[in-house]
Image (cartoon, rainbow, N blue to C red):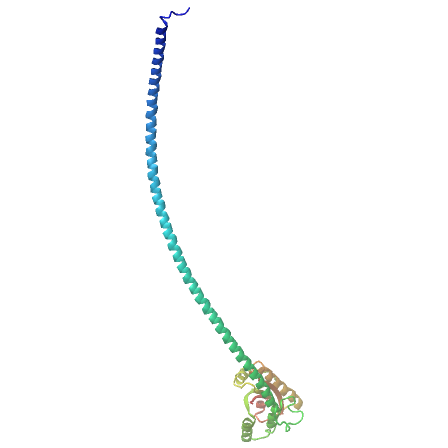
Length: 292
């Protein structure tokens, strides 16, 4: 059954009033909650702002520090590179000077070596020519006075000297000394040393080797060294010949390692003699130098 028309407006008013009250309650509740929420947001915003400000300040400080570090790094790099380049330039300059010095030294040494080599070659040529001339000179001489079978195999110059020596046999001491001087004066021969031997021996002793060494050291280049062997007048003549020849050869052999440039060593046995005095004095080899 429907309400009477007189009651409808009142009911509608109460409904509207209730809705308004509910709306106000909702607004009030919403406002309270908003205040609480808003108050929390404000606190968070302020904290965030402070944090942001601190970060900005720290960031600015870091930027300043970074800029300062970059500047220091730039200065350090520029200074280091410049110093390194300066040191490198100095090192290169020193190396270049050293290389030039070494190059000049090598050139000088090469030039000196070249000059030395040329001088050596010229000297070798002169020596070879001198060798030929000396051999020719030593090959010259009159050996016709030397009997057959005596001093065979010697150079003509040596045979000529041997011919003079053979003529000395039986001379008195004064005449013998004069003949020896003549040989030195005319044929350029001089006596160096006498090597004495024991009876029946052909061994060259150590003392005699020392004497031979000293004598050969006093000779000239391209001279002829002649070992002249003798025997005393006692004993078998053939045995004396063999022994005297062996003594001469051994003495000549002892000089082979001592001779100077272009020298020639020869040996000969000239027979039994008494020219040197007592019997033991004649078992001897006399070394002569034949100069050019």
